[in-house]
Length: 240
Image (cartoon, rainbow, N blue to C red; front, side, top):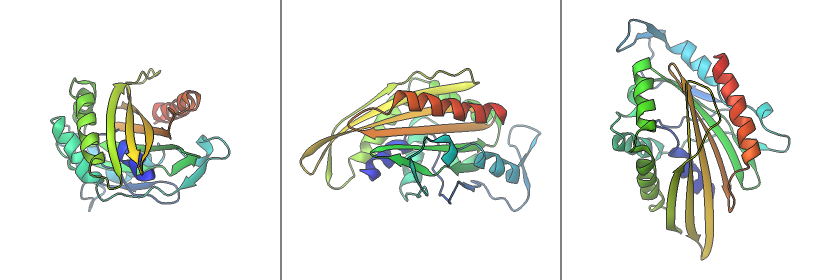
C-alpha cells in the first residue's frame, strides 16, 4: 500500500521529489559550481546555498506532528521524475528540474495507515513561480493530475485500478497562493477492494512552493489534523 500512496503523493506538485536524510534532504536542480546563478528573467542573482537552507527550514519536522507518529526517511522513487515530467508536459510547463534552485523533503510520518509529508521547492524566478501558479489554477490541472495518476497506477503489478477521482479541496489560508485537491483511488488488491485517499495542499509566495501531502486508507485524512498542520506550514512560509 505504501507504493500506491507514494504515487498519489507524486501528483501533488509540479516538481520532482527529493531524497531524504534523518530530517530533510535538499539538492539543487541546477549546476551549483558557484554560490550564485543569474536569474533568467530578473537582474537579481539567486544564492543557491541560501535557497537550500531555506528549503530545509520549510518542511514538516517531528515536533509538528502529534505524539505517537513514527518518522522514517523519505525515499526517492526512480519513477518520480518521469511522473512529474509527464504532469508538467500535460500542463504545458517545462521539466521542473529546468528551473528549480533547491528542494527539500520532510521525513515521512505515519500513524497506522495515515501518512503525512511535505516538500519545499524554490524556483529560479518569480516569473517561474507565477507560471506554476497559473498552471495549478488553470482548467487543465485537475484533469492532468487524474490522467497522469491513473496512467501510473495502471502500471502497478498486483493491483487493478477500479476508479480514480480528483476534485478541488478548499484551503483556509490568506497566503499569496494556496490550493488543494483530493484524489480518491479505488483499487482491487489481491481480491480485496481498497480505497486510498490523498489530499494535496499547495502553498506559495515569491519563489517558494510548498506541498503538504496527507493520505489514508479506507477513510479520508483527519480534517482537524490536516488543518492544524497546514496552519503550521503556512506559518513557516509566512516567516520565510
